[in-house]
Image (cartoon, rainbow, N blue to C red; front, side, top):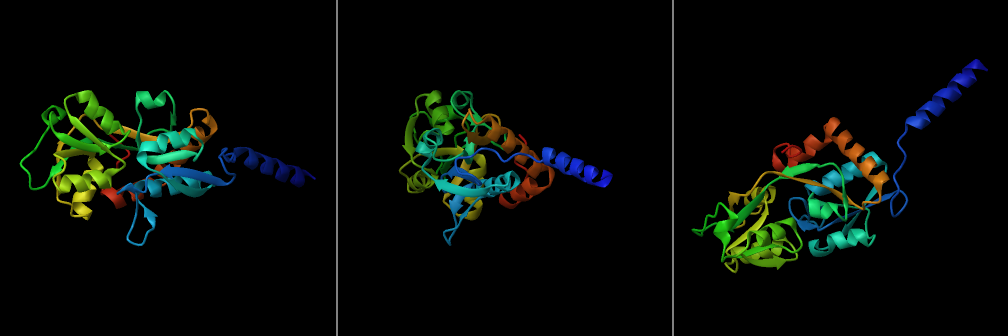
Length: 253
């Protein structure tokens, strides 16, 4: 009898330590919003398979949560609205953690850091180091992105918005734009892997944090996601993913 009571106590203790599965839109599934056109973070490879740094991070987090990842692709311009409309549980798509966004949506702890960078045509003479040097220039940027807001706040720049990075980088390469504005990690990846005729110019400001976006009201999911992020950093999963895509640890400023 004593042995049975001891075994029962151990079972109850281990059950109490197990993390509860967070509430999601579909039981057993984590629906993840992302663009699918934003290499190297989220895009389709030559075989049409969704891949990228954010894809790998999302899969690793879902695994720690005990949930099946389901990716929902949407254009950046409507991705935050899609979260509010309940189309997915989270967004894993290099969403910058800003004070303005925090008024309406929730964020996990930061999982990556980068800085904005000006992008110019490789063969051109333009080499701006500051946003002030872009005044009067046609600059391509993603619609609704934090980068768009920075350009508009700078003033005097002819801001041209696009659904995603491929479109404005194509226009930059053909001379329809004077410059583009995006993430420093993206610029380095494009130059290295896709041989686009562009180059990085000025890096602007301090490193910025990005997080997994979710509804402010879903505090249980936030707690679970934060724990999952800590776990993949502690067990080396994050470092492996980061080195694969960027050759460095991007979890710190």
